[in-house]
Length: 316
Ligand SMILES: C[S@@+](CC[C@H](N)C(=O)[O-])C[C@H]1O[C@@H](n2cnc3c(N)ncnc32)[C@H](O)[C@@H]1O
Image (cartoon, rainbow, N blue to C red; front, side, top):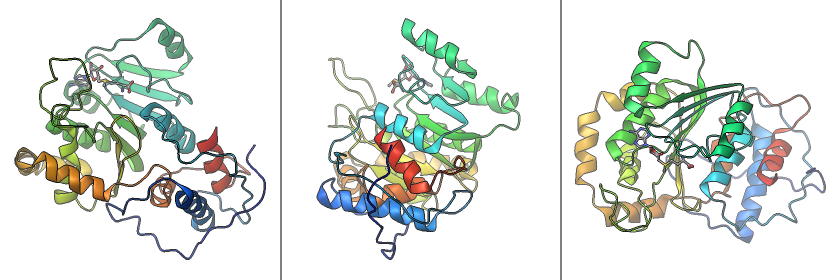
């Protein structure tokens, strides 16, 4: 139930979605306008199988755009928007994100040590096709590729949340891209550690968060693979989200220069990288994020307009 009075977009406002980063737009009144504008723009220019909206009726009065969504809710919203058929997750732990609604038709979960709670067992049964691979991501991807376990199936959406070491995350991104269709999205977690202890290579001895040095993949990709469309989202607690859109040969783009990438990542300084990343990050409710996501939407159900679909997805 989303339709009401119309707020039409500022469709003339230019957006360069191919740029890897955008000025930050803090959620707030302006962000509300930007978001509505973003969806209106989506409605007016969407292409590639997304049905165009001729008039859009939206009621945004009761939405609190300023509230942040955590990574579980953010990913669930993205699943509602993108409706992936095939979803792959690296690092599944208790299955909270793997089995959040809506559950895609085909779900691949990779973790050497998954810790499913009993309530997840019933969720597992609800999935039409699921493949839980109890191994490291490197081993799982080797199996998936060499044995062609997926046949011609391509991944539509991936979430990278396994071992928190930057070189492993880079390989996870490369392997996810290899298994994905064009314009699929790869979400990378743990890219905004709170401090250097959380960002260390080894998990801290005391209780607390550990994000490792995953953050280093962001400047590495911007530096060496600036042709990959990316956005960096800051306000998705607890540690933000880095999103890449597939296209071209990302696998070889990463693997053929993996030594250069690793050498660069070893040299990055925490404070200066964080400063650059914070300056370039955007909000989860910003117009550039809406535009970026729109590029990856597949076919919409008959009769559903792009804007209505997106707004409904974000609200529900
Ligand atoms: C932070 S948890 C994942 C949380 C889950 N994605 C969620 O949001 O609810 C990280 C998981 O990565 C798994 N892991 C550790 N090393 C891994 C590796 N080399 N490959 C894949 N998963 C790994 C751990 O067993 C752990 O369950």
